[in-house]
Amino acid sequence: MSHNKTKDKFGIIVGGGPAPGINGVISAVTIEAINRGHEVIGIMDGFKHLSAGKQDSIQRLSINLVSRIHQSGGSILRTSRVNPTKNPENMANVINAIKALGIKYLVTIGGEDTATVAYKLSRAMKGQIHVAHAPKTIDNDLPLPGNMPTFGFETARHVGTRLINNLMEDAKTTGRWFFAVTMGRFAGHLTLGIAKAAGATLAVIPEEIAKGASVQLVCDILEGSIIKRLAMGKNYGVAVIAEGIAENLKAHDLESPGHALRDEHGHLRLAEIGFSEFLKRRVEASLKERGLTVAITDKNVGYELRCAPPIPFDTEYTRNLGYAAVKFLLEGGSNALIAIWGGKTTILPLAKLIDPKTGRSRLRLVDVRSENYEVALNYMIRLRHEDFRNRRQSILLARAAKMDPLSFARRFKPAAI
Image (cartoon, rainbow, N blue to C red; front, top):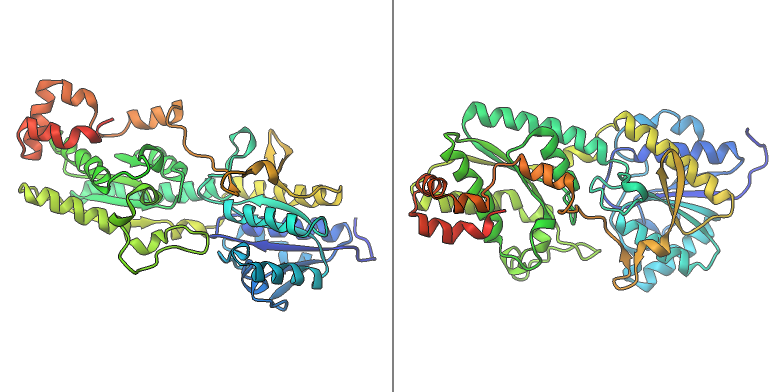
C-alpha cells in the first residue's frame, strides 16, 4: 500500500561484472520500497563516482521507470569494479557522499568483491546506514545456503550451453577442435555446468589445477584429449576451459615483465591475457613438432553471457531477493547477504561471509569429491591412469601421438585423471 509521506531513503548500487537479473533486483527493491512510502535512488557506475567525491551521478527511481525492466539484461545503473576500500580517502568520499545523499538503507548488488566492500562500508559507518547485499555473479562462487546458485548463473549457463552446442556441431562438421575459455575467476561452476549440459568433449576447471602449476600441465591435458580422440578415429572436439585456471598457474608463465595485468581488487585481468589463444598456440606447436596437424580454433565465451535477458528462474529469483532485501532492512536488519532457500528468505551475516584471514568474502568452489563432478569426469574424453596400465591402449595412444610408448607415458601420465 502506498503512503503519501516520504520516509527514509533507499540507495541501490551495482558492483562487479554484469550478470543476468540485475535489473530484476533493482525493480523489486524500488517497487517494494516505494510501496512502503520510501524514496529510492540508484547510484550510477558502482562506487566509481562516490569514490571520487562526486554525488551527482544518481538516478531517482520510480515504479513507472522500473516496472518492466526485470526481463531485460544489463543494468540500468551500469556497474564498475572500483574498490574504495583500497584507499582511505576514497572510502571517506563514499561515506560522506552517502551521508550527503541522505541514504539510510543501501542495497548492494554484486559478487564476492562487492560483498566485501559492503561489509567494510557498513562497519566504517557504525550503524549510520543499514546494508543488505544481493548475491550476483555468473561465477556462482558465493557460499549460499542450501547450495543455491547466485542469480545470473542459471541464465549464463543456459546461454553458454547453446553456444557450446553450436561449437560442437561446427567441430564435427569441419573436423576441428575448439578451445572455449569461459568466465569463472576462481571457481569452475560455470565451465562445468555448461560442459555437462552441452556434452562437451572435456572441461578443465581451476579446482583440479594446483596453485603454482605449470601451464604445460594444462596444455598436456588438452593435448592428451586430442590424442585420445585421434586414437578413436575422430579429429574434432570442444574443450571448455575456465579462465580462472590462469590464477593458479605460475605468474611468469602468463605475465609480461612491466605489464600490469591486475585490477583494483588484485585479480589478473584475464581477458587481457588471451588465454584461449595462448593455449591454442602452445598445443598446436607441440602437435606440429611430431608431425600432427590438428585444426584448433580459440574462442572466448563470457561477454555474450553477462547481459543476456534472464531466464524465468532468474527473473523470479531476483524479484524475491529484492523484496526480501527491503523487508529485511525495514524490519531493522543490516550487514547481511540476502538468500532464498526452500522458498524462504535466509539471512547470512556479512561477518560470517568474510574470511578473517584474508578480509575477503569466502568462496564456494566446485567439490571435486562430489558426485556432480564425478559424473562430469566420467563423460569426458581425457587421458586416464588406466590408459597407461592397459598395454594395448597405451600403444594405440602413443601411435596416435606419434611417440614411442615410454616417451608418451613420461610426457602425458602426469596429466591423466
